[in-house]
Image 1 (cartoon, rainbow, N blue to C red):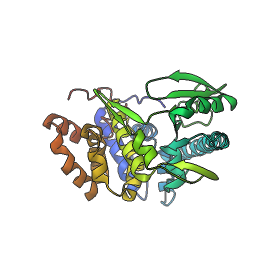
Image 2 (cartoon, rainbow, N blue to C red):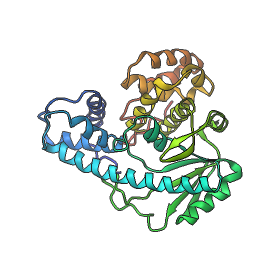
Image 3 (cartoon, helix red, strand yellow):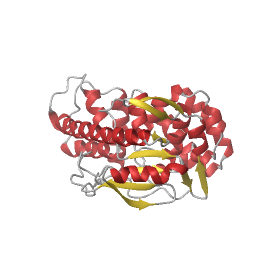
Image 4 (cartoon, rainbow, N blue to C red):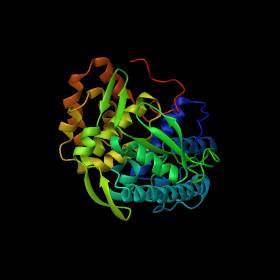
Length: 327
């Protein structure tokens, strides 16, 4: 992806908000905008990972060609091919791990695509996240090496692997199939929140089940555990100014399938969930998000609550040249 070259923060912020509205109900015909406004919308759509979905939303309208449709078609096609390639690689990894009797569980994108009605051609995937039992970590790494991957990074919560020859970005203007397709092995499911570490490993494994995913019997995370992880992970990206609207779409998709969202959200530091929930409530103003925030906001300071309430698609993403880090 590219960082937008923005003359006006107000204009790009408006373009971000237009995206959120159009994903819900796109205009029947393209607005009479100058090219500069269309450029900002394209940049916002790419940064927020929603170009493929916007393409599908506009399919049912009278839009034909124009400054956006051709670009969206190219974005959609590239993403479709990239996701198909990544899911094929995931199947190979999981099949070999299954044959070796290793406990490995896909997280985030592949599970949303495979189990929760998030169309494979509508959502971008940057990497493949796999939660691995600590006892199986070395064997899982050996599986990746056998399949042609090499370790390129080892951090406090995961190790990153890339296939040989797949280390270089070949096209930063789209979700290109040949751009790096990392695999991350996580012995722990956790995120850092400044001075706090949110560890969801026990929740992920204790609520997991065996079930069908991509043609075989796999370990599957529960909707509850996946939702809480995505909520905390979204806040993590807000704190880094790398948040994407596509993350809210994932959460809003999962929310109706969660049995006790209030109990889940209350089980971790509220600073880990409030920012993501504030964004959810702003762009998907549903009663359930208002109720969750009503129970959580009294547990944080006024300054943090005000900061979280002021977040938007522009300020929380890397489109903003001025990070929010003042609270």
